[in-house]
Amino acid sequence: MKKYTATLLSFFIYFFAYSQNISQGEYYWDTDPGEGNGTSILALDGSFDSAIEDIFESSLTLPSAGNHSFNIRVKDDNGDWGPVFTKIVNIGFGVLGCMDSNAINYNSNATLSSTNCIYCLHGCTDSTMFNYDSLAVCEDGSCIPFVYGCTDSTMFNYNISANTD
Image 1 (cartoon, rainbow, N blue to C red):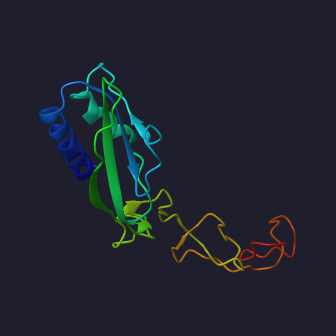
Image 2 (spheres, rainbow, N blue to C red):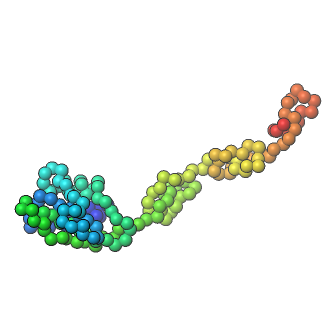
């Protein structure tokens, strides 16, 4: 975003050098919506100076990935719109994925962080086992098979190895 901000601010430096009373500004991507119909640029402090940087830093709407024409124009106090200044900008795209190398689904190619990182919860992941843990993600070798038999130690047929009646 800093790269776009620097490019956009260079437009305004040009405007300041050649125009003294800017009353309104607007920008648009690719197709001209007509004078006064672009996305408004507001000067929060009443003048088009350092406030521009803060505005662009927080609210610049970007189009989809690819090459796009960024256009900007300003209107003076007489109500006359100036020329359109255009800059071709490449909006990069990235690979969405888990960027935490401690997660089991870490994606070393990811350039856009997702919130779907999965971390190991160790346990028995075999659903046919006695101690199967449906929350476990990583097998830890602790699976215990079902051993059927009497689990009541007061009964004559008690099986010390049994874990299931």
